Image 1: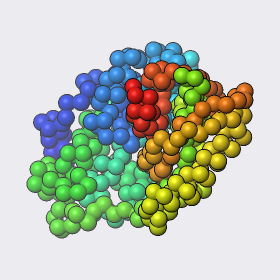
Image 2 (image 1 turned 120 degrees about the vertical axis):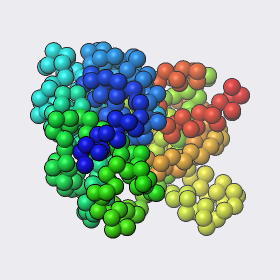
Image 3 (image 1 turned 180 degrees about the vertical axis):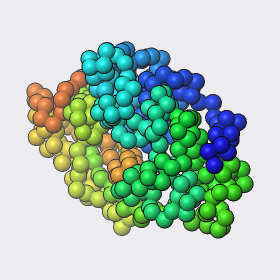
Length: 371
């Protein structure tokens, strides 16, 4: 099985930029980016990131806002913050050298079992089995294993299955091969079994059960959160605030926004008329937004108009955000829930890392300003 998989990989693997090196830093950056993100999305981000920060020392010396800006749009920003923190620790504690000891490496921020196994096996040839979504799917079919691949303990469970198959002389290549098999052949839907190098040993294929594996626990319902957002003008400048450095979207800048308790989506299902929305929802939203801005930022605004509605999905929830154009009236800004603020011209927005939900309302803002 190992030989068939390695032979297949040598002939069929994708020519990805991080496969052109054994540099542990470059492999590490790629693996962090590839968590929760598709390869085609990662490639341009990876190339740009490495161009700006070609080694761990340059990353450690970088400003956190520059790091977040280069990560902008890739999502899961804690990955970038942890990578930056880890680079600083490597510079200070390990003289700029990424630890070759897996147990020192896993002690760095953001490094878990998967990242440790991937980087240490590929860069340093340690016999550590990688277990990601692709590997779990391959193993579930190959062994006809019914343990749900999305359960809380799935990583530990499938790690025990993975290790006996690991090629201990070429662990890095083997790990890449089994992940590549999952990505190109053993796909979640309509797998290309006839092109699979280990088809003859696959229990699910032999029993005609491939489509029934892997088993998954039922997904929980993803909630939708309703928000109101203010784009506040002070003459020609607009207000942006910086989120706290830790937590969800930490360190990013945004237009001030607040969660409401109004379920706009359900109300629209019941009352589809624009008149109902205007009379019953928008007025309440405007008052709520003004109150939140005064309570949390100590400023009074007038609301000029409804600008747009933004829909955006995160991993565990969705948002419906109503965006309003506002005018600053009075008050000295006080920072309670935010870290910093700026009054900037609209053409300066590109200098700041913003959440994707904010990027989605910028076209409506530019259209309003006829830019």
